[in-house]
Image (tube, rainbow over all chains, first blue to last red; front, side):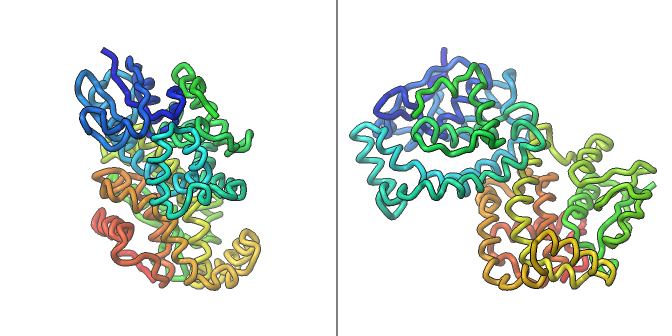
Length: 229
Length: 229
């Protein structure tokens, strides 16, 4: 039986933009597991498993529900030890938390100000109302204000990627010679933007852009095949 | 026979401030290896092994010289597989490169502007001349100019540590439940400042400060025992 991934979607059910769901989707593919996705608008999340989780991703693995992208990756590593590893050992598992914290604290806030209105515009009506209310409260201003003047902040975003750019001088993936979950953590954020926004975030010759292109090609190109902006 | 670590020193030969040498010192202790340090001023580095390396750390392991802190850690992991691991697997090895790049690109430049004149002042005469010439060329201004107004930049430094701070909400070390080389990469930078400068960099209740205190206690407290500012 396939694993089911409840996957955030836009007005177009095929637009799958959640960075956290992408981490899981790539992880499922990495492990070579059969899975199907279930398009889930924000306002339908409470119906999953009778209110199992306030957020997606959620997976249903033969009746067992799991939530939170990092916890799901840990679960997959334990439950499917015969598939390719997502962490390559305990050190990789621990360091992936650092990569996650780096993305959340440095990339996330900058990116939100670059694409938050674009996200809104791709949502269905009920989700638009939910998204505007919750995000404007969190941001302390309107979505339009948050995204205004974004062109002037693209360089801030590019600068924030400098640790990754420098690392790519040593190796092709954060996981080393091959991608690991830590790559999918960062990939998820860039794919979030790619799927939802026409804004050009990276220069074509940026080593980070080249790494992202490599990630888009992984696992039969599931990242590249996604409906994008 | 003990491994010899050529270790950067100040005017006081017991003041060992190099962040990169501290990474190696902690790694040697972590592996449980016998080692001795050899106090090495900047201007004596070219004499090691007849010009073996332009920088320290350098180690001499029974006549085999090795240089570069990361390469030395990889060497120790391979050469001494029976000691506690420094990486806990290939994933940890790869991710340590990311941690290194994060420190170099985000913490290093900020810290230089906080302590560069203090470093100079702790060096011997010949090293002071060398250090001023090379660093002023690199910085494009005098050491005094680079460090001026540093109190106003402490908050920038603290903000730059946010990824580590956030990660510490999940686990006590970057390596997970136990420290690994990736911890020593960051520790080296904070110990650099502790040994060379009286500037208070962290609030006492900062989770990063608490992590640093844990690191100072490791391996018999070799970090805490060091001559400090």
